[in-house]
Amino acid sequence: MIKLVQPQITDLKYRKKLLKDKKTMAFNKINGGTVDFNKKIWKSWYQLWMNDTKHYYAYVYDDEIKKYIGEVSYYFEEEYREYVLNVIIEYPYRHLGKGKVALELLCKQAKDNGLRFLCDDIETNNPAKKLFLDLGFKEVWARENITMLKKRL
Image 1 (tube, one colour):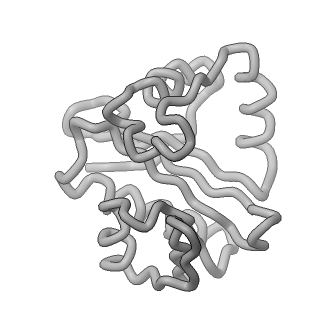
Image 2 (image 1 turned 90 degrees about the vertical axis):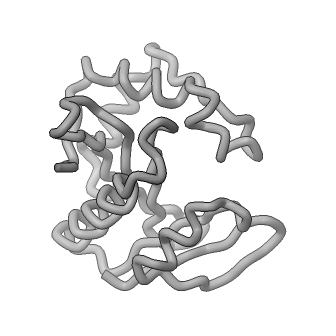
């Protein structure tokens, strides 16, 4: 069973590992691929993401294998005036239905937190686009190589 778990600050080493993995972060090549999640920013990052109502963050935990396999989040993006989500599943656990369950759980969490819509701005050729469309997200605009997908919760 997949569940969402909000981490303790000491658990952020998993996020550092996740964002550093080249295969997992290959979808992010337009922004440089991997991300350095430096320990120096953990405290301020944690304060924002765990204590601000415009932010939500959790790890994706797989009960069967008893480990984290990814992360989900959303935040209010001022530029779009929308809540934008993020789902990252570790490369070895993709195409097994785990990302779908994680996205469904994130949508439920967002609805429980009072949100009416969630969006994602993804690269137009990102294979995850099909997953979003299958779960009821609709294309609302596209420009350059980015497509905005939106779902009513």
